[in-house]
Image (tube, rainbow, N blue to C red; front, side, top):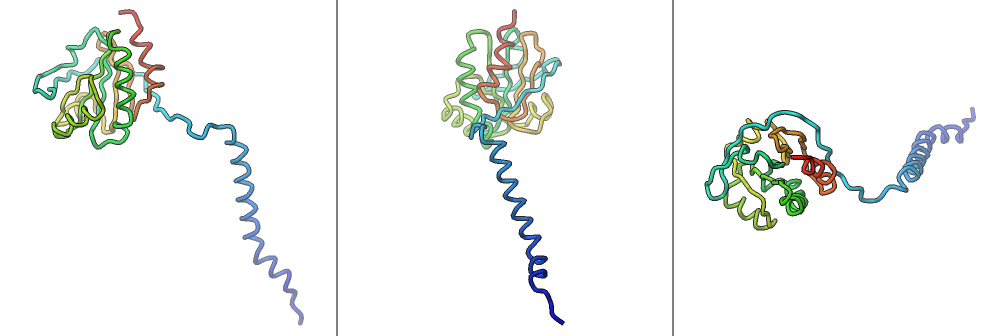
Length: 190
């Protein structure tokens, strides 16, 4: 009896052929879908709008001087929880510093609360990034675990002039997001 070899060969290679054809179609579709998108679209975390009284938080600075959030009533305050080892924290620091420089004369302050690093490391970090806004030390994680109850770094909270937390970010902040979400709160009537 004579076998038909071409039919068997076709059956053997049909799945491979169909898989290859499918991959080509996916690649062509992806090209047409994404060809007009910029290659490096800016990624920015969007803050959550919230409305609650700012927590009581009192910590010390590099010199051991005690400070409280209530000392900043009447100003718009961005509390930024961060650590020296945190890559997104490092990435957002230049944007935070630039925003602070631009709006500090309008009653805006950033309070950077370090999450448990040794003081010497925090001082070096502040020098490296040329930070001029207040930096508080939190060696026992009071800000993250009790006051703001967060586990992720960086985390940021915007407190209005009346002591109400209006925005909260989980993740790094970019300059455009600060301008879009925080600047309008700064410009509100006192």
